[in-house]
Amino acid sequence: MQELKNYCDMVGIEFMSTPFDVESAEFLNDIMDVFKISSSDITNKPFIEYICSFRKPIILSTGASDLEEVHDAVNWIKPFNIPLALLHCVLNYPTPDENANLGMITALKKEFPSNIIGYSDHTLPKKMKVCEMATMLGSVIIEKHFTNDKSLPGNDHYHAMDKNDLKHFHQRMESLLELLGSDCRRPLRTEEIPRANARRSLVAARHIPQGKVIDASDLTWKRPGWGIDPREYDRVIGLKAVEQIAEDTVLTWNLLS
Image 1: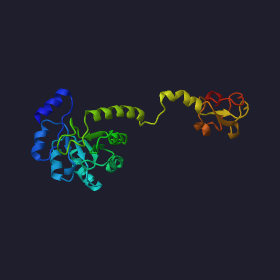
Image 2 (image 1 turned 60 degrees about the vertical axis):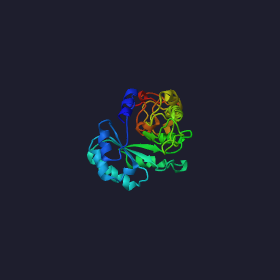
Image 3 (image 1 turned 90 degrees about the horizontal axis):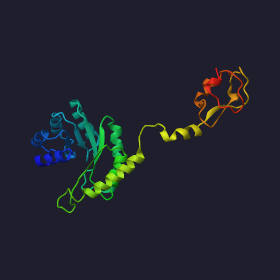
């Protein structure tokens, strides 16, 4: 185990291992900065609290659990005031695609808005579509078995991804995340000119004499949108024209008082 830790340090990746007993947790505490707790221990209150006592961030898998059990585990961890990530997981090896139940990712995000939400995948890699969709649904962490030979014996190889799967996933996600962009609702820089040209301004619907109090019959709205915004309609009503305003003039504030 120490050799794996040393190798991870050498190549610049974070070493992690999942403890299943107190002795393993004590050993791993000296060589890990984050603890992973298996789905099999989500109801193991004394073990979860023991791991919490190390005061390190925890990643908790939620496979084969119901919502009450997840809440219980979260509530056991909360008093320790440590970062917690919850991974949606289906405890089948492998998990058929139709049982991936990725909707639970958004359910966990809604139910636990203060926690990081991720996905632990046991589906067959195929084209890595399941992991792609999990990421698009908001999974910040993706956990998946990795192997250098899928034909090796044991339960952790045949459904694992290999380097080719990982490379394909990485390339696809770069493209998909570029398409996804930001979740902040604001106009893009490339929309500035179309925004001004496509939107409306308040416009004089007829000739408005100097000094006239503006009423609804004086106003209409037309493109472009570089004049007074129609959102100011109620504010404009009741103002006076400071000079004569010709029909079809785009209204600006200097024309009103």
